[in-house]
Image (cartoon, rainbow, N blue to C red; front, side, top):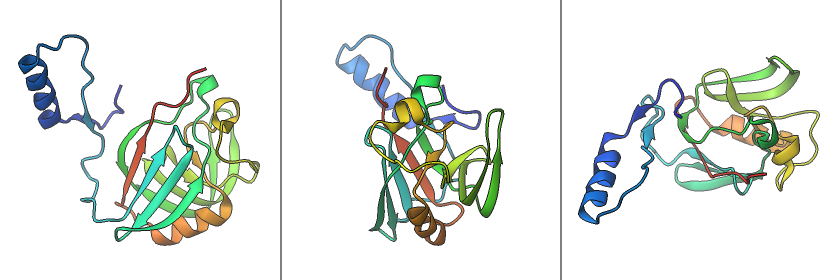
Length: 171
């Protein structure tokens, strides 16, 4: 299910349906969505997040600048991170993140699904990567070690692309 601002990728959907008809393929199809029509064209500066590998790669002007282990949404509580193509919505320093079951102060915040989901450090977390997200994941955000958050924060701009993909491991 796409988030509220998603629109179907009509070109992709038409190509998929044409392929099904030409090759006699039947069954359920999953529509592709353009999840952020305000996203800048991929100008070589973007973050790629792999939910399966629990890593991100940050490219600036087409060059790999930073790779980091991360912790994404907790799949055991159905808080898994959303996949899609987004853009950086906002950035802030010394932010306070408050939700139904959390209240945390972070040094760096980079939102990419409005002010709800983004990249941030987590002073309560010391382990990143691996299977940490299965039982000790976030509420959907991408937790990044503080030193790597500082680099990302200084080099990414509002409107830059964020690509989140992967299936995450099932329990």
